[in-house]
Figure 1 (spheres, rainbow, N blue to C red):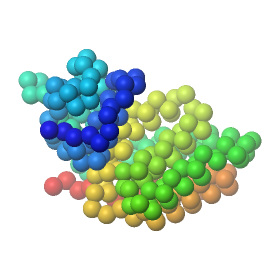
Figure 2: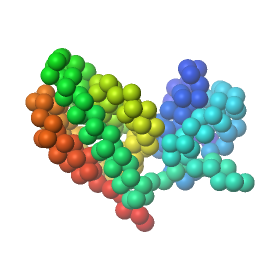
Figure 3: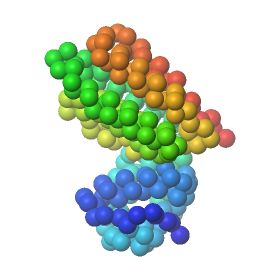
Length: 218
């Protein structure tokens, strides 16, 4: 039986259910390849089948869940090829976002204040060795980059891959997670954004993303 630590709150059900299912996977309460039973999810979260089905369809469209005819829905497991695809998509989206963001920063440097706040959350997560909270802060840092870029095109793309990225973060950091390195990397990235050097940022974000270890297929 699936377990959850806190009662589910009814908020924009399909989207919130999708987030909740991804958190269960990130925390290890669901496993890659595990079958998802609608009735079990409904009972655990106190919701009806319709929003659960919509949430599973959403996660299927985003690559987190796969549905097989006459078999049901299963959590996806990301191998090396899928991981590389996530990283390449991230890189393209964030490089474009940073080019736009540099223009905004030149006009208003204070727009980067939320990124400093997020790095502080990473430090707080480090203090209590909370890997999930640190991964969520990492994701929030990059999501904020996309939002600050002001692009109406990039944000929907990011939203479509962000749940999969969180799952990948947790799988990739299963054995060991270097909190200090993650904090320093984001501090360096933030200072580079403040410097408003598009060419330097392009190379830095590529190193930041593509240097991520990619899990090898078994």
